[in-house]
Length: 572
Image (cartoon, rainbow, N blue to C red; front, side, top):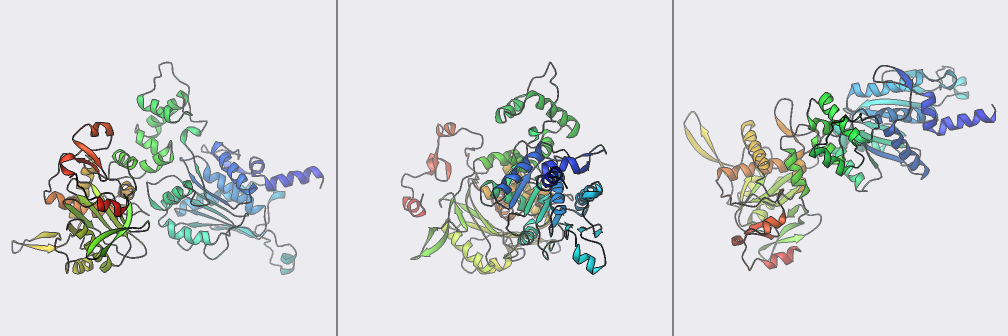
């Protein structure tokens, strides 16, 4: 073999951008077989991988994308190249459904079938789940002398939570992770199988599926530099093909003007294409366009799914969320005090003052699923505090007692279902201001009081509908990011029922829905409060309302000698 041929083979092995357009074939959307030419999205992914390899780092990338951009095709090509150009390399492809896994795997089969004969590695087997590149001979001597690559590509469905646990994985493609049934459990097992060495690659890619869940959490961690994964977001306007000629009478709408202000890359040509795509690809619905072709990462997460609550209003709430003071409550010399602690389960935005109401949703377990939640609301419908964590039911009852006493003997409504009965039985021994529901016996026409809130299909609808109305009307004062994010992932399912979307939680939503509905039934007075959502602060300050640590309050509600001792002890 001459020097020129050796150099070509070397480039084919080590340079994927050189290898792909020369040796890989793909099927286009219109059914044609073409050489794999990297598009804009794929070149950006490729450059990131090459940078990480040059730095001697393991390749760890998380991709948030628009649909049909080519991230999956690129990843399959990259994995095929790595597996068929190296010995003893194990690669695994995991998608959210069996069909999706098979479709991705079929790309690898096509890659192999279309390789030049002289560059095809020996193949021992090819079935629906695995490609094994190994000498197929049954002669042990021949196999020992020429074993082949002994590399393989396997597929699995995300529904198999034990996928990949029994083998070492060098290349992992996790596709549409946001739609996995239990991404956290599955990825925990998969990542343990991938050595933390420079010759390994893990690519997580997905379109968005609402705020919350494993993929959303990992994206946020990557963005914040809390993991080694490099976050790559692809906006629709980065695609060169997404533009059209501008007609003479084209005038941008105010919304389009705002888009161009936020994203200077958006030209009139791209706006013309956007209008065309909304009309022809999205049924005339701009919100659907945002879901399929997001402009930034938060837009991608916020408009996906079928949310029960009004997303534009929740986005306004989210923009105004702030961290409260975190800590826990403790009895000190007969007095309940707030002890600051960054790891505490209690987050406080407003200190105790007047009438308060506490809802309590009790966790079904201590390891997985929802946590226990106890939001504290005042009679102005402001969220004053939030207790949230995993704890035994009887200990949760103790925390509720402290919380209720600290907030001026607040009314506490505990959901009776499941472990709620344990909480109520413990709580009622020492705490008196508990919610009792009225039940009616149709046979005897008698009414009786029963302790706690009972969640049935009927009462759940009433509570959630009430919460939806209060959010839509902007009646609530909310600074808790955790609560708003739960609202954003609370969705309408195909059967019309409402629940947290798969991989997310709704404990704060349910606890708040319960107590807010109870407050409506108790006819708690609701004063004319200033909603800070969408209202300039200056306007509020010019009114009879003033800013306090717990938000805007009417001047008559704020005594001059406010409890300064509590401010100091809580670190305000």
